[in-house]
Structures are given as structure tokens and as C-alpha cells.
Image (tube, rainbow, N blue to C red):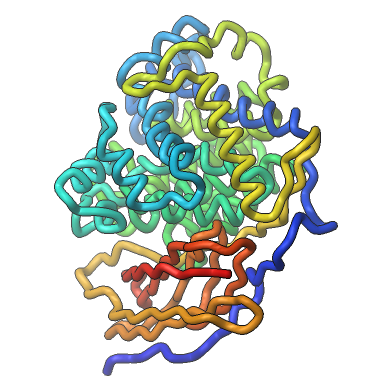
Length: 475
């Protein structure tokens, strides 16, 4: 018998007051923001290039310490600016689309930019771009029905800049990452980028690496396989706090298993491009690296599989936390800031500057202030997005009807009626202003008048999702 979701749940956690930053605002110095964004970019470049010689050379085994390549700045510049460093150039079209169209940009603008990109792509990114060029647009471009690599690592790799665009505002980073990730990924493939983005945003004010990782954990919904992986890493880290290889061995047995529940592509191979196992190696480096830049990279790299991208994510997050000025000089001196990234018109210097301007725009749009020497950001707590999984058996998505209408006090009321043979489990709204909420009926107050794109995800109990889009006029 089909079930219907008609219960009305008013979401109050994200009812936003109009006006400037409140007394509870997070304060950041302008210099600190600049240093941390630069640290995030530089960290990714350093670790990605360092790990490149071992990428997918060690499958189901760790890299021996004596096999770790030596670090040379010449290799960093050579690798970063040649044509296959996909952890540095894939995000540029998205960053550029946000720069050109503002933070209200979404699937239409991102599709245009990504579809027109000239870069060499792989797996989910390649399928996603090919889908867009064939007229299969987001979120269908990342859906498993069109993208067999939907759970792969791709969006996880290129999501660093999103968290850096929302300093100390992880909720805003999660909303942006959740929407953007569906251009080329789905479910766990998107959650990898959501986790990374939330950790970056939290790193601007976190007191410890553990708090950064905790933000990444809370950014992923309970009941998903990606969340289960995070919980495994944390549990095994508590059990083996000084032995990263012990945790690695347990991860290998569970998350590199020849089982579709563990990885959805290339199941019979030790080669693992799934976001979960590689995301676990990011967490290994952060937790066992204890805030040390070199040790963090070495552990994420030595875990194997995609040793350049996993180390790049871990070092980027740590670089955001400590800032470029605290990355050891031997790693950062001599980096070429003025050369174009492959297939783009952006240099490293320009990418850092664009990311910084985007961070200012996000902060101001949410009611914060960026003038003068200190930024004030309105708090944006961690709220996990929709429950979404790739069912092991084919199932129909929920049937959904969504509406919006003016509410009291200048708010907008949203409601959904949904039905599904498996039962409806979750409803998630993205309000188009870098905030979101759960509930079949929600009321939202916009900070500024204007036209907003609103997207709602409805999930059944298996994690199959359906989306609907609305355009609303506020104010």
C-alpha cells in the first residue's frame, strides 16, 4: 500500500532575521581569511604533486615508507601546470561561474560552464560533462541512471574551494556543496564533497583537527554508507590512537570489500575509486597527522589508492586551518603563482583571489560584514542535507508535488506532498540563499528581497530521491 507524507513540520532552526550581523557573529581578521584561503589552495597543490607518482600504484596495500617519493618544488610546478592534474583545474569552471553570475548561480550556470570546459576528465566528471553536452542536465547528469560512476571520488576531489568560500559558515558550505555535487555525482559521491566542504569552513575557527573532523561527520546524514564509513574511522581511531595502519587494515576489510554495498563500481577489482574508502584516507591523514603538515600528507598518501587526491584534500583542509604562512617553507617556497592552470584562464594567484572575493560575497549575502580589517560572519551551523543512496535494486523515485506561498511577516511557506511505495523518509529544502531545512512544510524568511531558486529533495526509505524546483519572489 502506498504511503503519503502529509504531516506538516514547521522548521524553525533556519528562520533568519533580517539585518546585519548580530552580536553572536563569528569574527575573523581579513588577514587571517586571506592566509587561510591561500593555505587551502597551496596545500592541495603541494600534496597532489607529491603524491602523483604513487597514484593507484598501491591497491589493497600501504606504501612502504622508503617508497614515498622525495619532495621537490620543481615537480610541484611541473605537475600542477600540466594537463592531467584534475584536483586543481576541475573546480575552476564552477568558481568562475560563481564569480560571473553571483552566489545565486546554480545548475543552469554550472552546467553551461562545466559543459564548455576543455579539460581532461575521468570517471564521474567525464560522464557528467558528456551528459550535459547531450542535454541530460543536473541532477540527472550525476544520477546513477545516467552516470555509472556516481559514487566515485570526483566531486570530493574538487570541493575544497566551496568550504573556503564560506569561512566559519559550514551550513552555507554544505548547501552549496550539496547542490553543486549533483552536477556529476550522487549520494555518497556528493557526501564526500559535503564532508570536505564542511571541514574547510569549520577550519577557519576550529581549535583542533578533531573538531574539524567532527564537523565533517555531522555534515553527512545518519543511515548513509558514507556516514557509516566516518563512524568506523572515528571508532577505530579511538581504539588504535597511535597506529594508523591498524585502522587502515579494518577499512580495507570493510570498505574495499568485493561487495556492491561497499563500492558500486569495479567491485571485483582491488582498484577503488569509490568516494568512501578514499574519503577515509583523508580522515586518516587528519586524525593521525596531529596537525603536522608533512605527517598528514604522508599518511593520506601512504594509505594508497588515489594517493595524490586524498593527500591533496587532507593537506588543503589542514592548509586552511593553519594558513599558508604556517606551511613549512620548504614546501611552499618556489611555487609558481603566475602560471595558468591547464585548460583555464586562471593562475593560482587569480584562483586564490577569486575564492577570497567569493568568500566575501557569501559572508555579506548571509548578513555578515567584510569591510575593514575584520570580517563578521553570521553563524551557519552544520545541518546534514537529504538522505540519498543508490539502491542496490532498481526502484522508482517518490512522486512529489511542491508549492510555495507568501507567509506572515514577509516569510515564504513551502510544502510538499509526496508518496512512494517504499515510504517517504526525508524532505530537504535548499532555499536558494545558502541555507536549508528538513520538513514537509517549512517557513523561511529571506534576508533580502529578490528572486530565489528553491530545490526540494524527497527521499524514500531506500534513499531514492526525487527533486522539484520552484522560483519564489521574496520581499
